[in-house]
Image 1: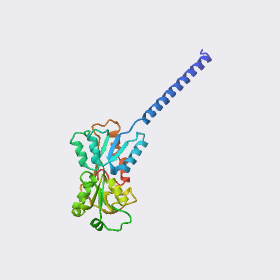
Image 2: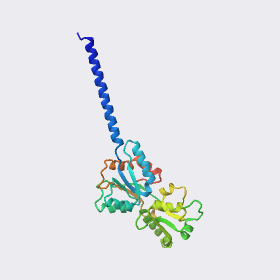
Image 3: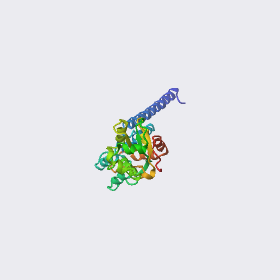
Image 4: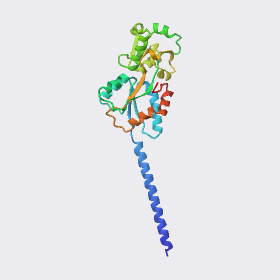
Length: 263
């Protein structure tokens, strides 16, 4: 016969064991959560024109439980040079293939990581109060665009102006900018009456309006390639790139005026 006290002792021991196990599980969960909260997301160097789109994508990524990506925006050429110089970077996103090719030919990209994540459109913008047509505006006004000798948006703009027969006429009146966002800012502030920028950039600003859309045939295809540099150390780099190429990532980019990766 088992004495009642023995049953009570056994039950108490079982309860204590259960409480201890539960406490250990909670402690482990808290520890993992704290570790995750303290983790750093991948360093992403991206073309200036992707600022809003990637910020949105990064927030969605973080909301799914990942460490927030650390985003840095500038002209593609400047960023490619930083990667070449060994700057910490887990993901590089360019506004054209040329700067990505620049790094690829130097063996600075992780094999198999390169892909197109979005496409774009080129437009001519002016301030909202301007009533000029595109032809009149190009004939008479100064024109802001990203540096055509170094920045993808500027190269696309030069190609479009050459294709439409306007380059020789507007070249003396071009105001080159460090990147496409700097070109947009010149028009926003009224310092230059016209600018050629991406359609996605025009969507970000109520201070400009689109007065002309260049046909895709007028310039090389506007594509945003992304790749993981060889020096990447963050384990989330490839996963964040996968997210940008996923259906959800593409929806987020499209909401900011970017075209589909296959467009």
